[in-house]
Image (cartoon, rainbow, N blue to C red; front, side, top):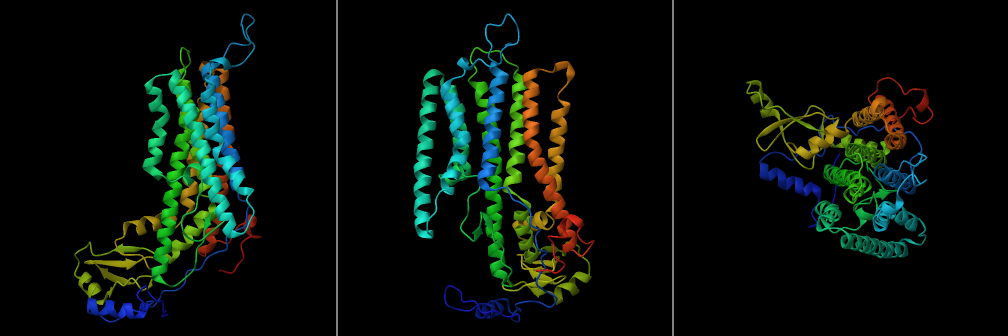
Length: 443
């Protein structure tokens, strides 16, 4: 299937192929080799997705609750005793008010920003201007509030506290640079085609465009993974560790407080993973993977048959889509196509990793669901009757209860993708829960 696409210098892709053929001294490579066909995609089943504002609300409630529970672990009182001088559960007067303000601003910034963006209703040009104004105005106010709280805390404590408070800022600059959007939103769009914060997959036979789409999706996945790691660590740092660092002249169980930091980090990781990588998102990357394909290097074995294979192999062309089992030579190596259609660059490690990761996304959700189940079991097992304390029971119960939502989503995504890709590979038909959503024909 030939195609005519004008390049930046005005020449067509067919002319570029002729130039390439003259350079390698071979015949002009075809646009598609025999056996290469368009991959078939099973329609993704309709199921409810958590909106952005609801996800931010859940994460805000989780982080605020984690901070409150940590304050209870540190500043708890024996309020139930008759000789106690207080009837309050926590010595609130010992908690620095500016620390409370700092944690409140950090944990609510994304929810407030999401609500502000949701209120913007205008045409496309005006909406972009208003959203930009809101981003820099609100972002400036948040940074001003955080700076004021840090200054007040610095005046009351030592230089070491300044290092504790600014350490995540240094990590943020190393990961995201001077971008403001990742600080205010969990999901933010890269340049490209997006609908409702989701990248759009375009089915095409153009090998160059497929690789460009793969690069966009790869950068989007890496950006989400950076956000996943940073958000989970930031929430555990300010909601769990910083209150311990500012606990002056207070005796508390250090091991219990440290365990709370760890389980908060794991809980935030699960919630962010379920939010940033829903099943519909992985299906978009899976569809792109079917178009990308993968190469397997076959010249490692110095057998005499390799000479025969090398003599009949194609010279790889970046303009060609290769069918299954086609052998090509590139940069002194022999490669065999593994996918139904392959346009990947032979020897490109990023293409290989992308294909292995999203060729079957069911493995991702089964791994995450198993990990989350193990975390829940460990949390329950840690409630030993011999060392049980009421505030520790509250801490474990809170994180375990909020983690159940992430566990439910991961298990649901696993079941959906498992049934979906069984239908795609032509094995057993979808089970009853998905018969209403999956049609028998392919798209």
